[in-house]
Image (cartoon, helix red, strand yellow):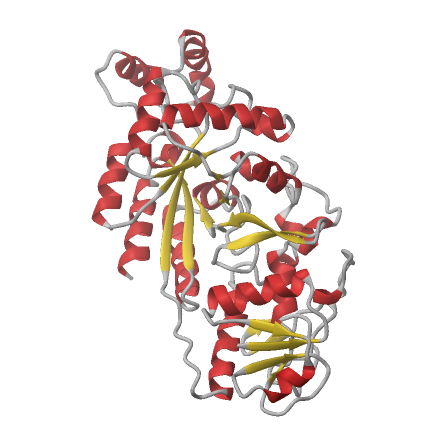
Length: 434
């Protein structure tokens, strides 16, 4: 695919590579030579205000040619049953600019402005344009690209652009691998004293049975997970937390023998990554220690991460990860709502707007988290499964990647998660069997 633009900028290069090369899997050449473009007989996109014969024309918005982060004046009309932005010319082959719109979403442009953060210092979903304009639960970027794919084939009949295959990516956060084991004496005594406030029937009796080897720890569901993932031929990614204990960090020490054994066994079967401690967001030096500790436990390099509590501050969190050798991050999603934070189900490289450059950090967005469904949206298991099916169906419709975030503790079928184990088993079945 040959593309003409009046100017070739880093933003333009980034988004055309993502859409044309990565998603549509076409060869790409971008030129600002109008004579070369005009003479070419291959399928071509005219991304300019000019007119050329035999080309697919999209009148561009200014976003990809700007070099500052400027508040955008956006509105969201509906085109072909989908919300769009950057309407530029109703007489072009597409009436809006899907490249500028996709760049706005993938770069998380709006998150560079000072929105009021939530309780944990995160960008608040309720400040997002997707939530406020009712398209958060739709993969709008993927929908725009699909319309572009169909329109290009219609314009250039010999062109072949097969849809990409659907994918499923289950991910498991191991915040607390065991409810009772590997806690140490002081934490065990403290847990016994606090059990009355949690009002979980028989908690201390179960704790004692686990500690003397008469019962299995309720959070130790890793054998069950292996059984389910093998049955449904799915390949999960596990994220382990190994930092210091704190108010929001409940994991055992990363060098405790039973925990090290679990990490090593899991790393021998599946992909794993670091689940940085809550405190590492304000003490970045801690993350380097945690990565080193996990690497020693797993006996392998650690290049994947997901932030604990989904604490993500763009671009600073991503810059810290890059400096420490992380190549993939799986934090892109919201805690309080389901949906497509960046408008896409597909992975993409992080674009640093402050430095105006594409980085080597690949972002893998997720759409659904167990805690979102139960704790934030107050759904029961049946309502949760209905919401998940809706998200899976919308992801399949664009041949995207459905990614879910679950915790081993929510599979315990114990305490506050009683009755919820069936939800994850149903997710695996829906995502792999249709």
